[in-house]
Amino acid sequence: MPDVYQLQGQRIYVAGHRGMVGGALVRRLEAAGCEVLTAGRERADLTRQAETEALIAELKPDAIIMAAARVGGILANASYPADFLYQNLAIEMNMVEGARRAGVNRFVMLGSSCIYPKLAPQPISEDALLTGPLEPTNEWYAVAKIAGLKLAQAYRRQYGLHYISAMPTNLYGPGDNFDLNSSHVMPALIRKAHEAKLSGASEITMWGTGSPLREFLHVDDCADAIVHLLQHYDGDEHVNVGSGEDLAIIDLLRLVCDVVGYHGEIRHDLTKPDGTPRKLMSGDKLRAMGWTPKIGLREGIATTYQWFLAHVDATGTSSARL
Image 1 (cartoon, rainbow, N blue to C red):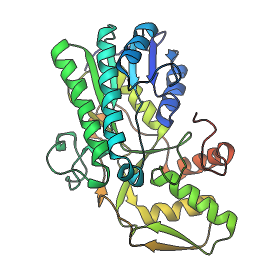
Image 2 (cartoon, rainbow, N blue to C red):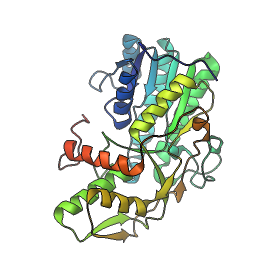
Image 3 (cartoon, one colour):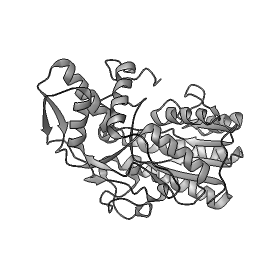
């Protein structure tokens, strides 16, 4: 086990601080006594190499956590495959090389559970990477994220830098994207249930059969896990970050409806795809380092719904996302 990286007083740049994960990281690091560095898109476009390198050189961070990414659900991935691949590759390459050139010795690359094969054995361990075909509905994003973790690994091996990668599962919480055209399943279901409740609709429609099993982790638990890795992990292999539990999407919708207070029927649109049948990640590696999640699913959904009521307007756009 490596020596513990002390956070107090460290200058840590959170790239993507306006997103859900980035915002949670800012909260967690500030609570730990760090000097958190941030920069919006108006200051630097991270898809541009010169701008990114100049920004990192100016900030002079002690460590970087890379939460910046182009993200979205099945519909967004299908509609903008080039954007998902190009933009994520560009951001990753520019950030890692910019960090190296600026002498930043610690870097956490954030990936996604979609990097794993569609039919990987469950629960998915870290060594399942590149053992089978990806899920076609988000392969563009997955390929970019695989390249990102391999980039961090390569820089670690060639330059001896403390660059690591963390692979979060499906995340939700304050700061999520509730736009139905680009959101992930949890915020989409929360918004659908809320709107059905407001309109007095007799039924709510969900994509597919609802049978696929998914794992969910509250974003504040995710941020806590990432900071734990920054402090305690210094290995070559990426690390899964998840809750260790999954449930069927239909059961998730029922739980969301119960929390929101919607009591109508659920109708299935079987013309829409289900996606990967099951995706549960093994959390054994992270738990062996002494970390476990603290926020239960019902509690997390309830607090996320309260945040939605306080921050999201009728278009689904969060006032916290600029």
